[in-house]
Amino acid sequence: MSESIGANTGTSILLEEVTKQYPGQVKPAVGGLTLEIPAGSLVMFVGPSGCGKTTTLKMINRLIEPTGGKIVINGQDVTKMDGDTLRRGIGYVIQAGGLFPHMTVATNIGLVPKMLGWDKAKIAERVDELLELVSLDPAIYRDRYPKELSGGQQQRVGVARALAADPPVLLMDEPFGAVDPITRQRLQDELLNIQSEVQKTIVCVTHDFDEAVKLGDWIAIFDEGAQLVQYDSPERILANPANEFVENFIGSGAGLKQLTLTRVNEVELVEAVTALPGDLASDVLSKLQGAGAPTAVVLDSRRRPLRRLTRRQLSRMQLVDDTVDASMPVVSDQSTLNDALDTMLVASADTAVVTGRREVFQGLINVQTIMEAISAANSAVGGDEAPVGLNSGAIPALSVENAMAAQTPSAEEPR
Image 1 (tube, one colour):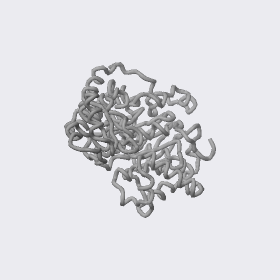
Image 2 (spheres, helix red, strand yellow):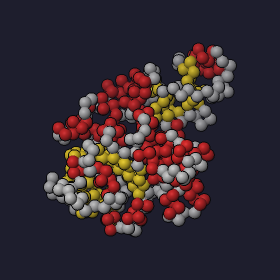
Image 3 (cartoon, helix red, strand yellow):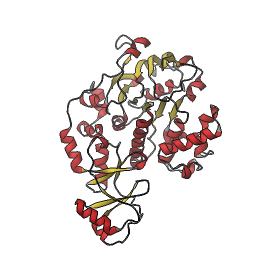
Image 4 (cartoon, one colour):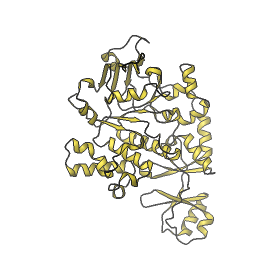
C-alpha cells in the first residue's frame, strides 16, 4: 500500500497488541489488544462507559496515538504514516454529524475532496451523488446550512461527508446517540442500505447492545481496559454468551432480541394495490375489490408511498390526490422484524408499508408474517468462524502474517 489508503471498497484492518497507556495511570486504557476486522464488514464496539472502545476506535485513524503495537490497514502499518494523510483516507462520523455551521451542506461534504485537490465539477458531482445516497434531494439540501436541518438530516450529511473521498474505512463514534428513537431507527436502516451499496469496512462504537445486534456483522464486547470479553456474530453472542459479564450486558429479553436478527427483506411481503395521484378513485376501488384488499397505497412519481386509502375513502372521492399521511406506519426493508412489530404496535395497525432504497415502495408486512417468521426460525446457530480477537496474555499473540492469514468471513454473512 502506498502513502495513501484510498480504495473503492472496504479493506482489512488488524490491530496487533495495541496499547494505550496514559501518563499517571496504573492501568492502560487499552491493554495489548489484537483484533482483526475483515474487509467489507461492519464491526460494532460495545461495552460500559470508560472501557476503552472509543480510544480503540480513535487509534485506528490516530486521533489518539497508540503507546505500542501496530495498526495494519490493507497490509500497511499506518502508525508509520503521516497522520494527516491517514485521516484523509478514513471517513469519520461523530454525534450530530460534526458539521461546520458556517458552511453549506455542499461545502461540508466537499471539504476533504477539496483538500485532496479535486476540481470543482468533480466535487459538485460527488456532493449530489452522496446526497442521493443518503436520501436527501440535492436540489433542496445542497445549499442549506446545518442550522436549517433536523438532527437526522445533519447526521445523514455527516455520513455523506465521511464518504466524500470514497475511503475504504469508515469510523463511527456513537453516530446515532443524539437523535430520537424513531429517527435513530431510520438512520440505522439507512446505514445498512448504504453499506449494501458501498461495502466499506465500518467500525462503530455504541452503548446500545440492541443497535450492535441490528447493525453488526461482528460484535466486540469490551470490559475495562479494552479487555475483549467476546468477539463473535450477533447470533452466537445471543445464543452463547461467553460469561456472566456478557449475559448482564445483553440484559433481559434475550429471546425477544432474536427478532433483531431477521430483517424485513428476508420475509415474504404482501403485495398491495397501488395508485397514483390523478387516478380515478372508482378504478382503484374496483382493483381493491378484485384483490380482496382493504386498502390501496398511493405512490408519488418516484414510487414513494404517500398514504393508504380505504374502500370507504375511495368511494367518497373522484380522483386520488397527493395528500401525505405522516402517521402512516412505514418501515425500511432493512428494518428488523422487531422494528416492524414495534412500528405497527405504536400505530395500532396490523400492517406496515415497506420501502427500499430511495424510499421506493416494496410491499406490505403484517403481524401474521412476523409470527410465522418467528415460528419458522431455525434455532441452529452457525456461520463462519469469528475473526481473530484477544488481549495479550489471553492466548499467545498472533503475528500480523498469521492473523491476516486466519479465516476471514464474508461481508455477506447474515446479520
